Length: 259
Length: 353
View 1 (tube, rainbow over the protein chains, first blue to last red):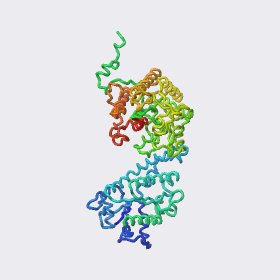
View 2: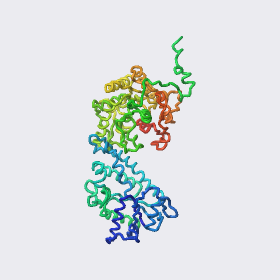
View 3: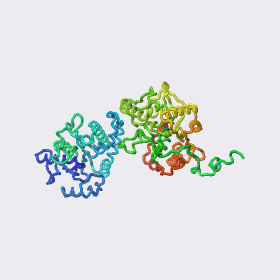
View 4: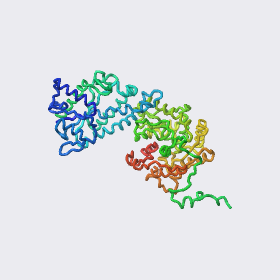
């Protein structure tokens, strides 16, 4: 059985961490074939995907035909075939979806927070908003991601969720938009709560960030921040050190469900 | 010669009503003054007032909203949190006394002794118990939201040229100690009923008139040019605590409110009356505008009534789309319709037999 780990750009540090772990002689992972994204953990395999510019959408999961999951997104299919030689995967293969919905960059940077604030942060000039109203905003924001999970459930594909890393203190909403760190931390904790509740209600497992990767305020500790060598500063992603810890948790989960 | 000889056909029952399609009555409303799109309009009142406010907004009038929704709050969730329904998040205001007290609280001249309701976990504002469906996490949070709300309300009248009010009920529940009116009977939506603290009141003609006149006086002290448009909700009482049958109790209540509107119209040339009540509930309409429960007004009925209003004002613009499909898409209860979505009074049905 191979588990497919897909998602947005946060998958990169996971894949890179896995690759480095294997190169460094890690015992819990080993390379599978020539692909730098394909690994073996126990009797199971892990394949990191969705790390191209292709967008992970419900529509890419076309149908299940004779036990195989078919994809409608040609770019994704080509990417998969390029690394594995396959254009379909067994429908029984689990999919771990990383950081789709549990944090909400759109909402965090929304102009709403120029004039509104969660009740406990509503200083003069800011209108208070209850957490219930914020939850309603988040639910709307998560709608597309929920459709992705619902699509996979409809097709009978086993799915689990992988949390994105804790927010960074230099998140664009703080460093570029000027929003308060407390605001971002509050929104993020609600986003994760709403997302966790939704998953739990559907019996879906969630792999949370490893303990110790966040500071006392809930932000990603500096040693786990990704640093770009060139170009614009990275204010979003965790690094391979964080990926190492997270991949160990994913490998543990995959080994468990593969047993 | 006699006084009836030269009257227009609208003065005669036969030509104006009996010989016409009930849904196509002509000249049933003649505006007393112009309402332009530049007119700054504030709305409050019972459930039916929601339609009036919505129509003003949809048609591009200067509808005042001092507590707009956060932009990120999805449109479908706004009504649930009391956003965009009236000119502030005061919820339904069923009586003139409640209206007067709402503005007295906003200017700090009335502080109810009953500050909050709690079920032990969540806290509710007794004067807008449905504004946050699950209440507030703490008393401190309730106070922050209440203060922000009252501050917004206190700014409302200075921005208003036309105040639209829909009278809903004469029956209410008041706090015995300080006379504060509750929008819903304690213990129905939230809170707990205590006969030592709460008592029933059925406002008389004189009381309703005096209350609204007191509101007019206050509003015009803020803006001496303010005008008023009053209506009576055609939605019957969900339940009566008067001891009478709910039908005569409803007729008595609506009759008082209708008479008050007439008195206000006759007394003040800056008060207009729009007969939405008659257009929905009078017998020539044969209850066509009601849902099968004979209480809720159908989307088509609302549209017809509002067309009469805006046509009379020379506005044949696009009315709000009929929302029957919307109402059918996500009914909260089998009988619930668009008109009832934010109607606290409906909760009484839960407690009825």
